Image (cartoon, rainbow, N blue to C red; front, side):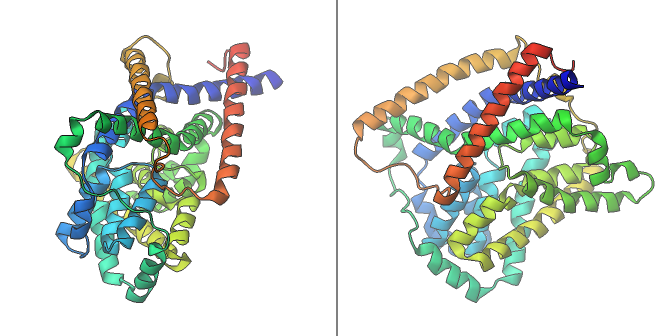
Length: 410
């Protein structure tokens, strides 16, 4: 019995590391593109067009968000800055959804782990999610609450970078030094979230039986209950499962893959992916920015929008015959072999080295200057989160030792 436990432990750790291996190059590619956008796209000029709850403002916020960081905390901090500078609350919520659901690196991960149909659903659903949430806010807009929240958001909100000539910057050494700085800063923000999310996914994939997911998402009742009722249950339950994981946007894709491989319906998978902004630490961050009343209002708007979007996607893809059938095997995704993943990861190591060199050059040129962006992860939670990260690292290392000694379960 003891040897069996160690074998399962080793297999779980190996699966988690396999998730890292499969997606490492995707993170490097995505964040390199993101860093270039962050460094060369002037955003300050956009904020003055975001003050009304109209199509132009929402569209600009969506584009702005898709071109911004996918770190959930960074998305919330940037949205707070927009509100403080006069952006309408509808625009701020659109920005938050876009910056966590329509960014390049997330799309690459979804393509790798879930396939092209889920990627198409993510893009279409992301736009639908923004449209639904915008309408809900306009219909329920609590003016007094939002005005109070805006005043609170103005307290200590960081300044956004002044406008600049992107053509001049892209031709300068300073501009490319900024790319390296932005790349490293983004990784510093998200590596803990990714580590926790991928580790949880690896252990869930191996240790949680399929019967648990079948009971939670009613998939064993297909044929006994109406299909629409099971889809509704999946869409409603998925955000609570996502909230319980405490994992943000980039870390929950492997776990979404685990859910898909265990028979969770399309509506449930999309509801899970879209719920990254509803995890408790992010709701608490919004409470810090705007107060608990508005933070819970935002969470409520997001929940209703996510459920509606998941159900509309489920129905539309079913009518079009595009609903994903089956799921990719976890074992196949986490294999270590000499294939395109190996060579892409080799190239990625070189890219990371180059980005770190550029960042070092930036620090040497600007020693004593201003620090990075204020992404406000929250001082109270930093030490606790860091202890959790160290614990997860220890669990992974111990699991790899167990795998080396036992060979896992396969």
